[in-house]
Length: 98
Image (cartoon, rainbow, N blue to C red):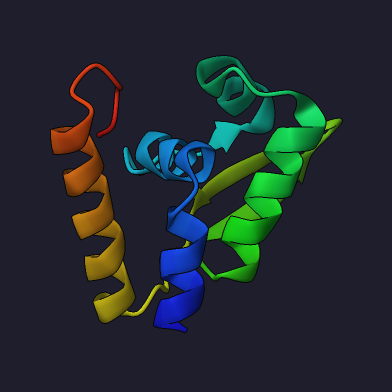
């Protein structure tokens, strides 16, 4: 499982999505698309990878899908996510990584 998490976080758009979701809220795929400058199909593919890795949960809301961090993520996997987000924030201060 840690390998799937690391692999999912290795892509900049997915890491950016995780940074947005790290605020603890639920975010519409339309918001993720706008903030990460991604098309709907591209964003959906990235979110599917994060979901398969167990990092996010989704909920359909009319025509949109809303995502949030998986609250049941194992602590050791949560530590990986936290470390990846912190490293990304240090590596790219111009990016808005929470």
